[in-house]
Structure formats: C-alpha cells, structure tokens
Image (tube, rainbow, N blue to C red):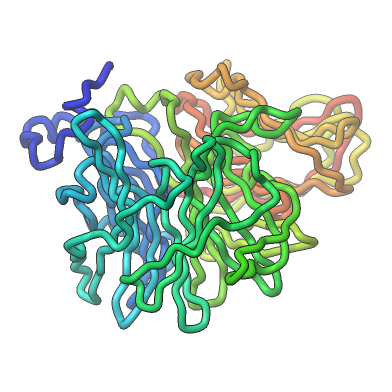
Amino acid sequence: MNWTKEQRYKRLDEAGEKEIQELSKRVNECPWRQKFHIQPETGLLNDPNGFSFYEGEYHLFYQWFPLGPIHGLKYWYHTKSRDLVHWENVGIAIEPHDYFDSHGAYSGSALEHNGKLYLMYTGNTRDEKWVRNPYQCIAIMDPSGMVTKMGKPVISNIPNGYTEHFRDPKVWKSGESFYAVIGAQRSDETGCVLLYSSPNMMDWKFEGEINTGLMHFGYMWECPDYFEIHDKGILIFSPQGLHPKEDEFQNIYQSGYIIGNRLELEERNFEHDSFTELDRGFDFYAPQTMLDPKGRRILAGWMGLPEIDYPTDQYGWAHCLTLPREITVRENKLIQTPVSELKKLRGEKIAVETIITPGRVSIDGFHGETYELIAEFTDADADEFGIELRVGEQEKTIIKYEKATKKIVLDRTFSGQPFAEKFGTIRKCHLEAEKIKFHVFVDVSSVEIFINDGEEVFTSRIFPKKESTGIRFFAKEGHVHLNAVKWAVS
C-alpha cells in the first residue's frame, strides 16, 4: 500500500471506531504475533524511549504510529513492569498536538528529578514547504502516572554548523549538573553527537560537539547514549550511511558503541577504541540503556530497521522490542546477557547430553514454537556444528560455528516468508573459542542468540509457518559433544 502524506499524519482521534476495530481484527489474525516480547497493539513500533525506573517500576516507552505499519505521526506509548518480564500496557504518554511536536513526538529519554520523571524528547515539525524544524522538549510524569507536557521547548534552535537532523536526547546527571547527548549531522552531512548541560533539566546550554576519532563516519548519528561502567566511558549510537566491510555493517543502518576513558565533560574529549557493532544479526537498531536500582546497566533495542517491509505489514502492524539485556564490560568489550529475571518465563524443562556425529539429529522433546534453549558444544573435531531452529518441511533457521574460519554464522535463507533479501540472508562474526555456547530465545517470529555468555549477540526476525517447530543439532565432517537444556515458554 502506498500511503499518502495525509494518511501518514492522520491523528488517532481522527480515526473512526470502525477503522480501529477492523485494524485490530487484522492484527489479531496475524500468525506471527509474539508471545513474550513487547509489541504494538496495532500499527508500528520503533525506537525504545524513556527507559527508566520510577516509583518501584520499570518504565519503557516506544515510538508508535497506531494506524498502520508505517513511519507516520509518532506518539510515545507507555508500558511498565515490576520485573522486566511481565509488561503492562499503560497507553499513550505523549501525544503530538502542539506547535513544537506537530509532526511527531520523536525519540528521547527519561530521568527522575524532584520526585517526578522528566521525559526529554524531540518534537518534529514541518513547515508548508515540508522543511523540518526540530525542537527538544520536556514532559513530566508525576507519581500517579499523569504526563504533562511543558508549554514550550527547552531547546528551540539548532546550533550553527549543524543541519535539521538534530534529535534523540539522552539525559543523565553528573554531580549537580544534568547533561544530554543529542544526535546530529554537521553541515557537511557527516554524523556526530552534541553535548548540552543544565542545572535543572529546564534551562539547557550548548556545550559543543563531543570530540571523537570518527570525523567521517556515516551521515547521521541517531539515538546516542552515553554512560559509564567503572572507569570506562561508553557511547552507543546508530550511525546511518556506513558501507559494508567484510562481515561488518551489512544491515541498512547499524548500531554500535565506542569505549574508552571517561568523557571529559569540560573539554568534551572522548578517547576511545574503534566502533563495534552491538548486535550481529539482521534486526536491531536504536538501543537505549538505563541504570536500575540494583546497579545494573540494562539495554533494550528495537527489533527492526527503518525503510524495510516486513511480512507482518500485511496484517497492520510491525516490529517489537528486544528482551532486556544486562550490559557489563570485559576486556574493553561490551558483554550482553539476558536479564536474570527472564528465568521466570521458564516452563517445562528437558535436557540432553550426547555426542553428535556427522549429520543431523532430532532429540525427543526438543521442539516448539516458543522456548529458551542453552546448547554447549565442546571437544569438537567437526568442521562445523550448530543448531537448526524452527525446522519444518522446507524451513529452518541455522546458527553454527565454522572451525576453519572461526566464525559464528546465522543463516535465515530458509527461515520462512522472505524479506529484505537485498541485504543478504547470512550474518557472520569472528570468534575464537574452544567451547561454543548458544543461549537462544525463540519467540513466534524472532530469535535472540547470545554467544558464549554474551560475547556476541545475533537478533533477527523470522517468519516461519506455525507447524515449523523442529529443533535439530548437527555436525559436519567430524563429531562434537553436546550438552543442551530447553525450557518451554508459553
């Protein structure tokens, strides 16, 4: 369907009850609705926003266009949880109806201040010539959950030397001051991050550009997120416009991080290592982190990408969020592991220990549409070994290790209904290890695979038939020792 400008910017309150009911009916008929991931009731979900802990609950907002699977007029939708596992839909938190967000409440973040939760976001506007003018705005949520927008932006102007691509503020507090990083594009159409400071979350001062070693690295840096773990400074961002390089940067847009010494706030200098992708799979973008009361740095990402048609589009909805991941640092590398609370999802358990000889093996009890699986491969002399997930008559999703190349490979060539094939159907990354551990979460239309306790992660949407529930283990040209445990998730 080709959506007109009027359809894209249609407000929810302009839609009739019949239109919404018909859309909901179509969504509920979709065979690929997820069981344990955050997903929109209708329409399109994208960036996670305002990830925070406030009044005893985790709060997670996301970009939402309710009337179809396209990037139209964006709202902030609010969901909350006490345990990062069971999420309650609260409803719309920020509605775009003011002059400073007339064409969408774009991405941003949240921070508790003075007993309230401050939501800082980008207000998107367009003039009569369709020229974009962004504003940085504040809405405040009180302990009852009521959200009130401030009557005017807190940052109204784009600094000199930068274009209208100026969005996605991420806020934090250091000492007595508040800081925000904002994604930007220089006038020469290269990406960067800008730094602002404030004494009170309302009055913001432009400090300047953060000085990195990446002067010509894509044309726009979206969704920046700066935080510190121990003595390390970490900047996560999503650069647009990178060119594929061997196994790297294969998706339409990337998300990754640079890690180094702590950011020097006054000089804005950030000494860092090279850019590393956060996720090696097909569908991961615009992640955001928060610090929880247990001292954990937790990340959630959008399990999707812009400018790609997904098989769920025909049912009136698109995308979901990743499972929450705990972020730690090991040897100057970010390690991502599923939060421990996800064990609450575990149902019936089955385990096996065996030797896989050349060929494919199905094991009694190892099958399902939604499950958690941990498979450890040791003592391998096989050329390659791994798992086939969601196996059907002509369908399978493959995760494997190639010994000669020392690479993890995810292959969704035969995962089900195809999409985005022009970006390839295989993803790889290098990993040197004696033991290979795959920790896999399979939902109705997704896989998240944590390799060797979070050294690498592969996140991907897949769209198999409902009857494709098989699991097979395999080895090629040799054998491998397998120790596997599976839990049903319902």
